[in-house]
Image 1 (tube, rainbow, N blue to C red):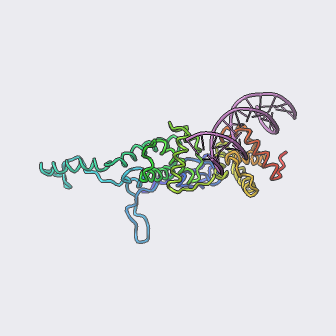
Image 2: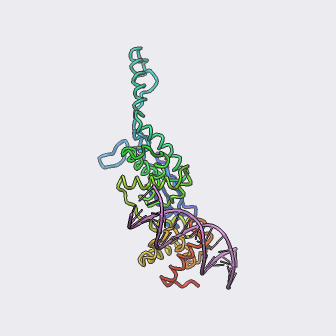
Image 3: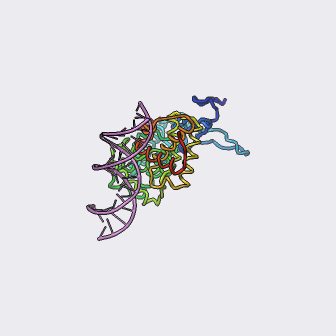
Length: 303
DNA sequence: ACACGTAGAGAACTGGT
DNA sequence: ACCAGCACTCTACGTGT
């Protein structure tokens, strides 16, 4: 029997919740509130499909790039019994004992796999602290695995390489974790992590773009408890600002923060520069500078 | 309390050697 | 690897409403 749990937005009561599998976020379609960034993955491995393509059901945990063998290993059980439950004779017992021993060694057999085990436990910890979704965590794991396979980790700190992988995954997926938030969640220095980040980027041929201010709007508006009208208005302002190249060379977060400030005033949901500065990791001064530019260049009239 | 402005320090990037 | 130059942001103020 299927159990259907009804989820509603605590803010506006809407049932229109959109799931973003990559970001691991559930957001309300109507008011934009981000409900959770750590959603449980509903899709286990499927047993199979009917002719019509209908799923027969799920079994087991989802496949997992976070485990050296993808989480798909078979273990030889410790009970010395055969498939029918009969105890094994001494010869067979010895044989299985040997098999188990070699399986145990084989699973984490070489330095690469041992490295991955250490790295993924750090990744686990880090994504817990940062509240990363499953998609971001997996992307980080994929990047890190490529680093190990490419021999980039040798001679460098595993923690720094993991942190850099997380940062790169965040950039690739257009998430909003800053380098500083990652630095604060590790024991590595900012310098170490950005150097590792640079190395990974060039070795894997990954190109990253400067984030667009728009990606910060949802999270900031949610933290500031601003309604959807303000979010929409902010996006309109940012679009005009981008067209007029007012975002070039400016910190995207600063531009987003200023646009939210303006949008809030336009829609009569006024937040002070201080409040916006607190949630956006830019200072009031930066918000003021961007605000001044935007209002001046785009000809807004805020009384 | 809040908005606005400024000076000097500092971090980050680029390009040259 | 180091340095200089550059644009941007931050800290820490003062002033005005």
